[in-house]
Length: 134
Image (cartoon, rainbow, N blue to C red; front, side, top):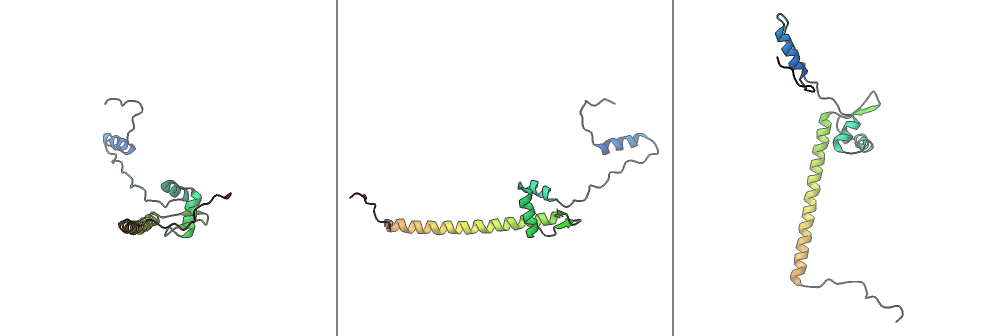
């Protein structure tokens, strides 16, 4: 068997499996199931969203994350489903505001086009400036 170069990373489960194959009468290593998804902390959410922990804490306390709870009455925890619900809500909210903005732009464009077609100059309501010494 050839030696591996220094610093080579080898998966632990692969090594255990190979070692158990070489020994007669020893069952092969059983790979444990991956850990279940755990609930996120305020700090985890702050890193995820690129915000300060105080901002995320305010969101959680406001109720923006469904299913959020305090662990032992101290630290907030948010389930992954709550994070997904928050992100979906943000996407819907952003889509609605963009739709309203684009409608506003269309109306502004129609007004500008109508004004240019009539070729009227805008009326100014400010009187012209006069020299104070005159």
